[in-house]
Length: 141
Image 1 (cartoon, one colour):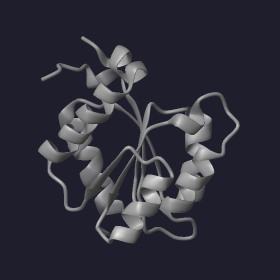
Image 2 (cartoon, rainbow, N blue to C red; image 1 turned 180 degrees about the horizontal axis):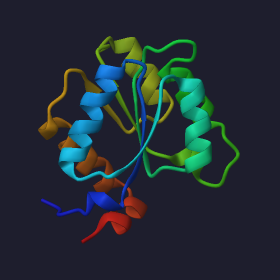
Image 3 (spheres, one colour; image 1 turned 90 degrees about the vertical axis):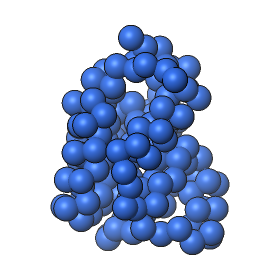
């Protein structure tokens, strides 16, 4: 198992429910992540991601006025160097096959169904880091 320095990660957390945002932020903090930007929907999330250029994004699916799938669509079409390749992990209570399929079409790197545990989030984060040479280099101890 890889040993990563999660403090080096910059994470964007896009979630419309304040309590869910708090829970996910706490889980990531327990893993070791210290640098966060947050947004309450896909529109403000896309603006925050463009502004801050995080290393990874955790995003809910069902939000108003812009949901997570529309956020993904917007992110993948951004004309900012490599920002369109930013890894996105969807965090949602929606496990319907069509939602998962649409997320995969838009190059989501992970899909976790809420509620999630620290172990589940860490395992998915580790999987995403291991598959991305840039992230692996960034967080290597």
